[in-house]
Length: 213
Image 1 (cartoon, rainbow, N blue to C red):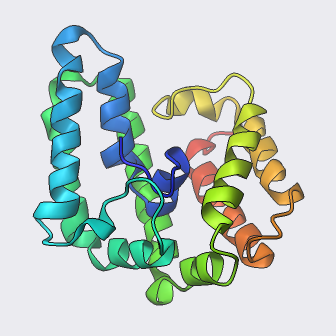
Image 2: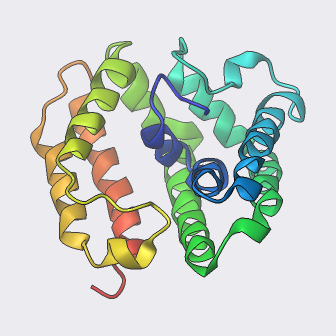
Image 3: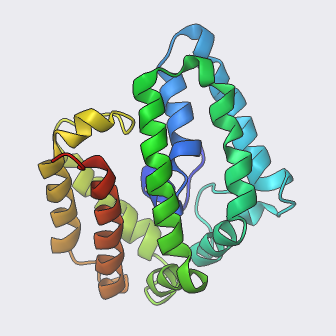
């Protein structure tokens, strides 16, 4: 599975690629044997989209720790139309393995991804630059990723990301998750930008997950 600086779901949300990278493989991986074999096909599509079709070197491959997270975000933003179009193929590959709940989850996360990407990529990815370059080099790997894991451990009864209706009934827990980010200090990061970014991204997520709450 692709990773950004050793993190999984945090990076997918930050890069706006939950619906077309994380969810298809996660959903199909839980299915029957007929569908499960498609996980590798989905991953091959993702690899091909990120490396081959866009003719970029492996420094855009979201695997393990990278020297400049900001440069990766910048490339993701510059490649957004082509990358998004290519990654949508992963959904078509597993279409026959998706039920109505899965499809709704993918649709909602697509909206979230688009809004997050628009926010992160604004002004030449200035938010990412301030967050990932003004702090210490370990800000992402030893700061944001560690804090995210800590906060998620306190997230009670976690539901699959595609279960929009279920998550919508537990919106207070999303507020608790946001509070966990706000109350913890990250001295190795640019604190003000981190809190501003977290608040904005969580607001985007809640606006789609908690429409009826």
